[in-house]
Length: 255
Image 1 (tube, rainbow, N blue to C red):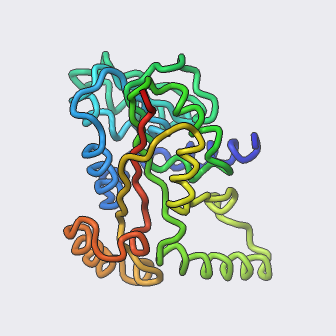
Image 2 (cartoon, rainbow, N blue to C red):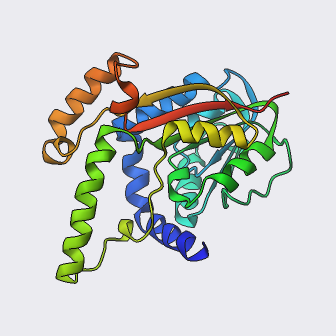
């Protein structure tokens, strides 16, 4: 477990600069962000972003929350986040620190909402992180999570390519890339819903986004994104649960 976390930390420390420059420009992230903001309450006291990266959600969430708290396993991500937010008019209400989503250092019921976009898939199991999210939410609070959808056409087809690539590298004795040195634990949405329930959280909403296809996305990104934008404009198109490579879910902690 510690070795797995160390690999993730090293990977994101290394790519933190590029991530900070490019993340907000990605259509996929912009869509996840829009859905998350639609699912979150209009006014909040305290909100926690687990796996906040370079605090790319901070500005939007400070518009509706009294306090924004963000944690990330990568110290370099936090450093970029602090540099990003230091000139913001509400920076005194923003608190960033290195932290582990499976062992949060906050008191029980400390937050009105928790958001986590693109963090759970880096954990071998979601169980501890969901238990921690439940613990730090106040009764009546909500969590909004985004996780890659393993059941989507894109990830189903991509698994075949990934296995063939790994086999070829072993045959050629080539080392794996840094991003291939840890497991990406994509979700099956129905199973994630069940895990939320087991953690004590009640599913309130679920949406699918990022309608891309393998190998078109890798071969012709422009054509792929044109299709993605068209389907995204439909909201939840037919077969969204099979076409959307990302699952965004809202869950509440009962009163």
